[in-house]
Image 1: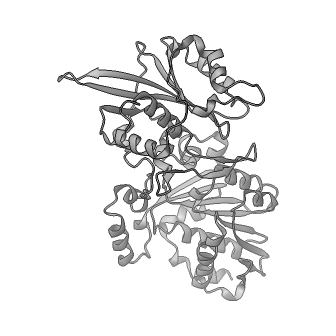
Image 2 (image 1 turned 60 degrees about the vertical axis):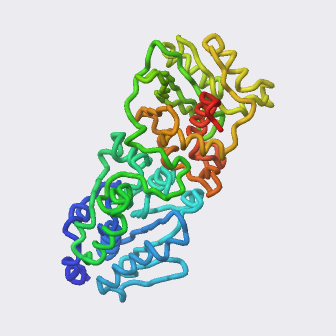
Image 3 (image 1 turned 30 degrees about the vertical axis):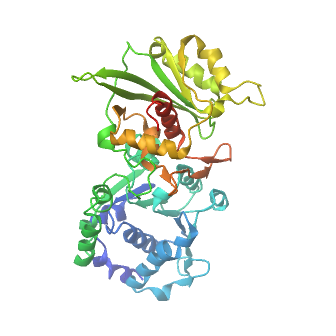
Amino acid sequence: MQQQVQEVQAKFNPAFEPFFKNKQFYKVLWGSAGSSKSYSTAQKIVKRCLEEEGHRVWCFRKVSTYVEESVYATIKEVIFAFGITSLCRFNKTQKTITFPHTDCVIKCAGLDDEEKIKSIAKITIAWIEETTEFNEQDVNQLALRMRGQFPYYRELIMTFNPVSELHWIKNKFFDNVNEHVKKNLFVHHSTFKDNMFLGNDYVQRLENDYSHDPNNYRVYVLGQWGKVVTGMEFYKNFHMDTHIKPVEWNEQLPIHISFDFNVVPYMSAMLIQVEGVKTEDGKKVWYNRYLDEICLKHPKNSTEDICYHIEENYADWIANGIVLYGDASGRNRKTSTKKTDYMIIEEILGRYIIDSRVPRSNPGMETRHTFVNRVLHGSFPIHIEIDPKCKHFIQDLTHVLEDGQRNKVKKRERDPISKQMVETLGHFSDVFDYQLLACYKDMVV
C-alpha cells in the first residue's frame, strides 16, 4: 500500500508541498482558476485516507446539485489517477467513498440548509469547495463539530477564487485575524502558473476569456481579490477607483443622516456631509461625502439604540445640526409603542435636527435606478465620495443585483441569532437612494 502511494509522488504539484506537510487546523487555499487548489486538496484527502485510520471526511458544496460534478468527481479522479480503485468502495447515490482497509469514509454533500451542519459529528477532515458561496456561520459551525480526541491532526480546508475583496473570508482570515485563528492558520496562494500539469490550450483559453474584463482577469487569471461582474449589477455606474476615497469631516458643515429601519441583520444609518462649491464659470457643484456607516446588531438594534449611539459617538459631528433622511415607512406607528420611528428620532435627536427631508412615500425603484446611476455616471453636478471604511455600503454598491426590470434583487439568508430569513444586502444602498433622491428632488425627472 505504501509503495502505491510513493509511485504517484511525481504527480503532485511541487507548489503545494507546504500544504501537504502542514498540520494546522485552518487551511485557506486561494488563487486563480486552474491553479490545482481543488485537485491538490483531493490528493491530500485521499492520501491521508490511505495512510491513516478512522477518518470521517466531509466534502461540501453549498448547493447539493453541484456535489456530484465537483467534489465527488474530483475525489474519484484522484483515486483513479493513483491506481487504487481496488482499495475503495463507491456509492454514487450516497456520494460516499469508503476505504475498508483503513476504516475511512469520505462523504460529499451540499449544505443548502444551515441546520444540516448540526446533525454532523465526528468530522476529522472538512473540505469546503468554493468557500465564497458559504456564509461565516457555516464555517464556524463546522469548526465546532471538529473537536475531540483523534490520533491524527484535523483540518478544515477552504478552496476558492477571491471574487470579492469585501467578502467575510478576507476579513476573517486575512485582515482581522484573531489570535486563536492566527496560530492555527495556513494560507496558500496559487495561480495557473503553479500547475505544472496544465495544458497550453487551457492557459490560452483562460487568457482569452478574461482579457476583455479587468476585474474578472484579476480574480480568475491573477488570483487576486476583486469582484466578479455579472452584468446585472443594480449600480452599474459605480466604480471603486472613482467613488472610493478617504474623506474628512468638516466641522463647519451640518451632518446629513439617512436611516433604514430593518432591525435584522442590523439597524443601519449613514452619516454624510454635503457641500456646494462654485466653479470658475459660476456654476455650482455638489460634493456628497459619505463619512461613516452605522450598523447595530441585536440586542442594540432599535431606533432608540441607533439614536443614542449617534448622540454618544458623534457629538461633534451633530453639533452643527442634522439634516434628516430615510425610509418613508418609518412614519408608520409601531404596534408595541404606538410611536413612529421618526417620533423616536425627534424625541432623542430633535434638538439637533435643522431640516427633515423624509418623503411621504418612497420613490419607485425604476426612478431610483435611473437617477442614482445617472449621478454615478456624472450626468449631474453631483460628486459621490465614499470613505473606504464604509464596508457594508460599498458591498451593497458592488453586489446588489437587478432583476432585469430595474428592481433590486435582495438575497435572503437565515439570521443565525433570530432564525428569521433576512435580506443580507441592500440596506445601505437603500439609505443611499433615500438621501440622494430627497436631497436633489428638483433634478429627479
